[in-house]
Length: 422
Image 1: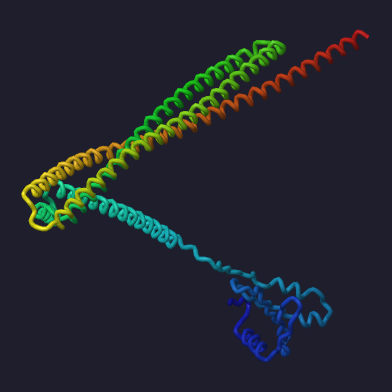
Image 2: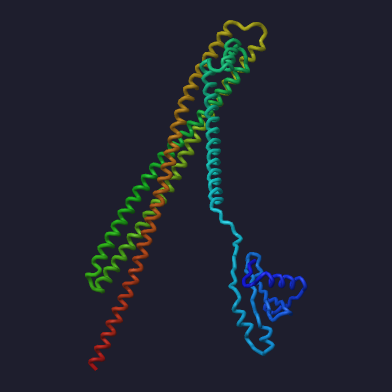
């Protein structure tokens, strides 16, 4: 709070007046303290009651106004009111603008994003490492089963099978494992053949789409050249010949547009028919391969059952096993090892086919993306053809308007000539 034009004595009198209740309120918000022992009046004025505003409080010296009013002089109060000091307002904005805090929050957001990306990458790497370890363990297990070496558990299992050739549980587990691996091999073969056929079909369809796009591009270039030549010859001919040429060009463009649309429809039907035929052929091949695999699996199961029954019979028979039976069992075990070796080679081939299948999948994805791009380009070309058709229609409308204007001008000239003759 600041005071101007007031000494300490008058300030003390004003404070005492407030304390003793010697205050009179006016309709303009002024507070008047009457000094009875003198001829001076001091007016205390306060402006602004907002909590966010600090205003200067001024005291107006109206010396002699009481005597002047008693003497009948008017307007002296307004005259001395001009001595009031200028009100000074100091606004305080209730807002904090901290650019440093904002930049700090942005940096924290970026750090959190980076940590999230690192966490996702770490999870993906851990998952890939776990899958790789599982594959390596499976490969080691298969090598140990087939070659008689590898892990300790595999070696002990093979030793037990060699020493105790009449143990049916080990033989059953081994045959079950062989059966599972053979089923996986059949599945991989079917998937590889199906993917290979799909890849060849996609390549053929991509080649057809490329040829069709080239045809459309050539037709569009021809139409564009015709349009440019027509634009060049536009200023060199009169209205009648131009109208006739425009009409003929419009008809030819209509025919070309209809032919293009027919070709598009034919290509669409051809693609649909080709897709249906390829799907039927793939379904037939898949059914035949699945049937053959099922028959082979059933045969293996039957052989497994026969072998298990023979082993059970030998175990239940009284007396010791003869040398001939032991020799036959050894021969069967040797044959079983040969089968396992063949299955191992087949599994290696299946792994190679799986790698080729992954490469084919990558190629199929790339061809699918190229197909989408070509489809979008074909769509753009179709839109350009439609735009050219709309432009042709607009040119026809303009030609009709020009012909109407020419007819009106001829009629007006004829009427003017008739009036001149009259």
